[in-house]
Image 1 (cartoon, rainbow, N blue to C red):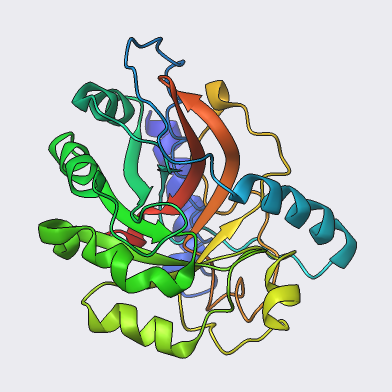
Image 2: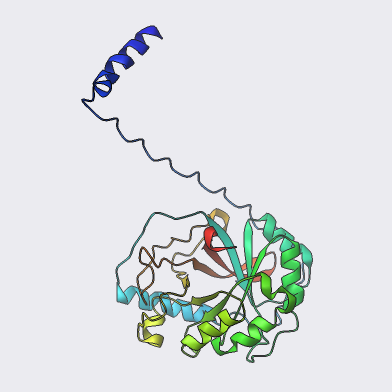
Length: 279
């Protein structure tokens, strides 16, 4: 031990005399997130009263178009940890489903909040939001038709104040998003985000960069995510620049990574979000 201390003292002598500088400490890697448990078979009978998400076909088209575009990709260091998120149009009647989702590592539940094909609040919205909150999940809502933003937020009733965001959906079959929609969502005390993809936004919005100030919920399901080994990472797959997003200062806040995964009998889409975005 004495010999080792003497060698260390001699090595440090130039530093003490001002003849050198200490080497920088090596960065410490963040510990890997624990892998989730496997799907648990459930006796939950959750009838999907709304149709399957129309996003499935759109995002498959998005993946093909994205491959053609070949825009610049960026992979900056993560600014925070990632959390697992599910979005769904399904009717869920059993509170146990939400508890199992929380126990499986899900931390945000995003639901379609108007009756499908209308702007009328869906009668199940408040009941499902309450079950999610009671299970410890955070909540958010969206509507397939972005013009239904008012009905979509109103559907949350007393839980509107606890919404993490309202997502303005921009994909084939939906109207273009407008600044009035963004401002309207904010006027109701809810944060707006835009849901779209690199293969959809340029065609539908002329690759406008006018909305780069609105947080982006991105989509890329090309990696065929395996749920049994899924670790939340909002920077995977690598972000693609479009619409003014996915730069160092406008990085997406979430990414949809898989469609129509059966989670305890309920079809959901799997997402990863930046934990620091959630309140």
